[in-house]
Length: 208
Image 1: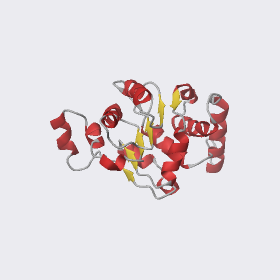
Image 2: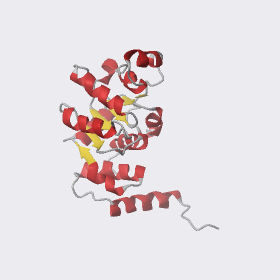
Image 3: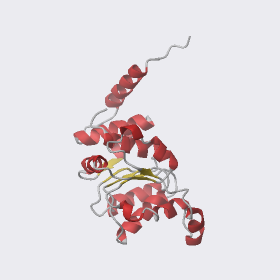
């Protein structure tokens, strides 16, 4: 027999013990540390805590929005599927518009990615929403453009696009141009759907 831990509760307990032991949470507020622990657990990289950026009151704003029934917009199906629906406090609707009718046609006509075109469909429902971007930098760039043009303002932006082209730049743009909209992000190329979903899941609970 291969020797490994089989008990799921013990795995869960030990995992978070190791995260807290290895991740530097010293520069974070208590509620930010809770989110950081979930993010480290999702990617297995304790060193991301040095690149995490929380705007003032972002965790509190996200929790309040979810408890109030806010819609959750995701840029990718992997993000939407990673959010634990059973834990959502108000049966919050999760929407990913990437495969909606018209997106495939709209994107080449406008000369933009499908991810950016899908953001255009969020419309007025963006007001007070929780946004989780874990794949496409263009989705985050487009969201910031729309906000600058006067679009409805979300309650919080969880910005974790990943990749080599535009990912780091889109997150710096978020930090610099959020216009007082609360946000949580990870500087640099690292990110991904698992982190974006983990961020939303962490906003649901006060503790791990």
